[in-house]
Amino acid sequence: RNKEENNNGSDESDSEDDEDAPIYNPKGVPLGWDGKPIPYWLYKLHGLNHFYPCEICGNESYRGSHNFEKHFAEAKHSYGMRCLGIPNTKHFHGVTKIEDAQHLWEKLQGTVNKDIFDGAKDEEYEDSQGNVLSRATYEDLARQGLL
Image 1: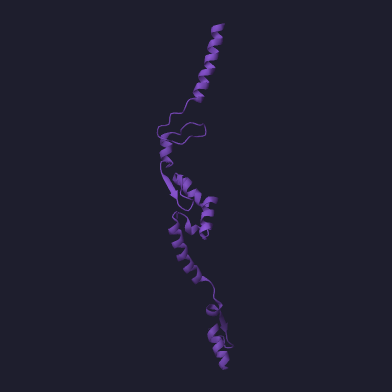
Image 2: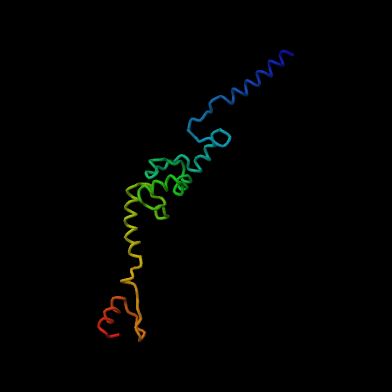
């Protein structure tokens, strides 16, 4: 009976040793849900061997293209964009350098401001005969009394 108790005791200590033993992970593969390294083929399939840095997020590196693409909608990236005074819109998806984001924002502001409605230029009037005139032309003709 003592031998059985000794065997049972040693089996328990062996399983505890297995759990406490450091996991063999020479390639630095991330751990899965079970605490063990994921298979290497899966690691390569998901592109987890590539790191993507983002200067806007404080030089944070993202492992894998999926995590990198996902981070553009996350709070840390949005906060970095707000600190630069730039809205986090779809135009800036994929931009990771501060200088690139600022240049793109300057360029976009030129096109956005061009598209804003300006009443002095774009407003149109119609005279009694049905002619469509710009605001400036209509006011000039009205001052001259030709309408």
